[in-house]
Length: 242
Ligand code: ATP
Image (tube, rainbow, N blue to C red; front, side):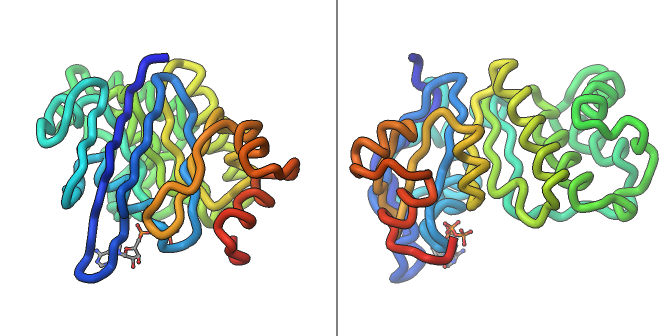
């Protein structure tokens, strides 16, 4: 399988805190990759480095053969659904997407926006202001925004956080469809059932370091634990607050 994301020995410190401490990851094209770790393990910091928002102190990141700091080809190839985002509540869904489509210089943006709204099941609310949206609708709009440039890789930081079961399922189905259509997905989540159901491979990090990486079957073998991903996670991170 062709590697699409490669991170080699990433280090990022904030003062005396080593948020990421020598992390290396390899993700293959088309993979649905789960990125796990306890609170404060360094997941968001890693995603920020992989998506060019912050620079590592050292280490190398290559996305589809392009290495940072060569930002432009990478930004054209990725979409990001960050942990928290500011929505412009007074804008309609359509205006919001148009704003981002124009930032990316998308040709025929109205057609693109209609397709995206259809994909995230918000067509019937396209002229409603975002302030009237439920949390799940906002989250789906956030995914639509991240898809504006037809990314080959989608990074998501806890996309189902705070959603009810139906909202979670809507996002999960959307991600499954996207992955089926060829988008590589990098998903950070604390919902271990979600990760088990969706991801073909996972990495668990703790204190900025890789603990284990592989398919769930490989993780079971490596840890000698036949149980669920949650059992493996708890055993490896010694953390009871998932
Ligand atoms: P969570 O699951 O709680 O979202 P996380 O795995 O995403 O956690 P990070 O947000 O990457 O973890 O944080 C890793 C460490 O780096 C933590 O100790 C955090 O306090 C610290 N940290 C992250 N961002 C900053 C920052 N901008 N300034 C100072 N410290 C930071």
